[in-house]
Image 1 (cartoon, rainbow, N blue to C red):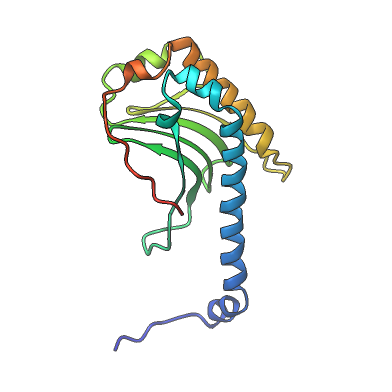
Image 2 (cartoon, rainbow, N blue to C red):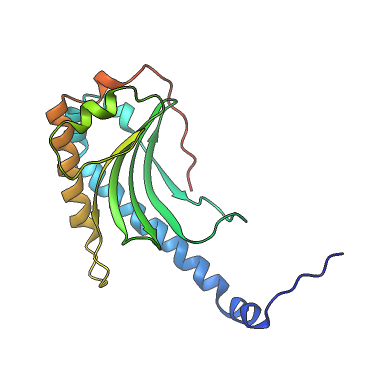
Length: 186
């Protein structure tokens, strides 16, 4: 049997607070996902129209990264939100937290095979659009001073997201036909 070297301070603190920390993480996930879900639901008809997709095509499930305890998780960043996942694309609405920059709420489209789609959408004129090789996203930083109004932030980002898709004529024109994957509920 291998002997593990565990610091007594970590073990002592863990025994006192692990259950409370785990509960706090679970509550944070639930509350963030509830706020995002309410904002997305409140904007649902506008999202459907702007994206030119059916309501059922935009049904999303809760997600978190990491979804569960992983030995490889280094604690440097995490995401909590909603995700609508298909075989070749997905839309996420999420809060990102991490060490490298301030936390933010974002709306993101990821494409498996983007071709020229990302470039076409990027030319929409929205200067705040973050563009990667296979994704685009709009986001807004959350105040680091603790005065986070996630509801207001979600609403602002979703209005900008709707404006973007209205300008480009919807997402449907860029999508291959694909079956939806089930998003695991966390």
